[in-house]
Image 1 (tube, rainbow, N blue to C red):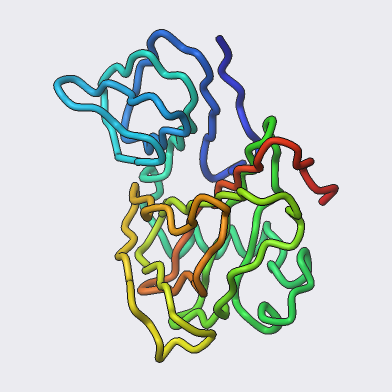
Image 2 (cartoon, helix red, strand yellow):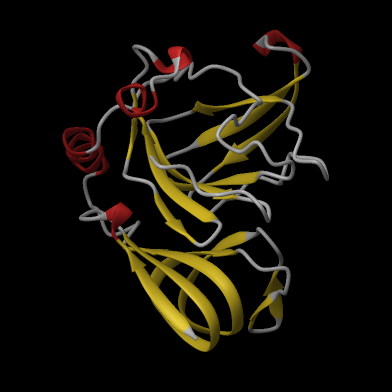
Length: 219
């Protein structure tokens, strides 16, 4: 059993990874993302694999693996919160150097790996964001890479396209606080062309899941 506090959300959000916990008390509004294959009971319902919800003042049970985000709704002035985040986190282009991110108002927290799971927060500041369609994850050469995104603040949409052109859009999922989009990868870890697009300035969390045999990258 373990509860590990992650510093990636400091000082804006509290983030914890829970593993093999019999019970956990939720105090105040909290986003819960189930990272296990086993469901997490929530009163008369359950939270399935890679599903997330907002819970408040309740107890969850039999948590094999989950990540929770606390204090995401405790900020009275969202504009001030996002300005403080921009003053704290570097741009994604500075960190990752990808040409599609050059000049884009997209910021990121430090990335933390817990075993084969990587956690990063991103702040998308402009509307539209125009972060660019992508489908490859070159840092993971082993087939079977998985990734999902969970909305924390603001609103957006996850878009999937047939080609590297947003005009070929075929699927779009609205993203609101507490929402995780459905997995878009196949059994081999192949992705369609996809991107996150803002509806409002927002914050989301990316969770990267490496297959057996892959090693977390050194960045």
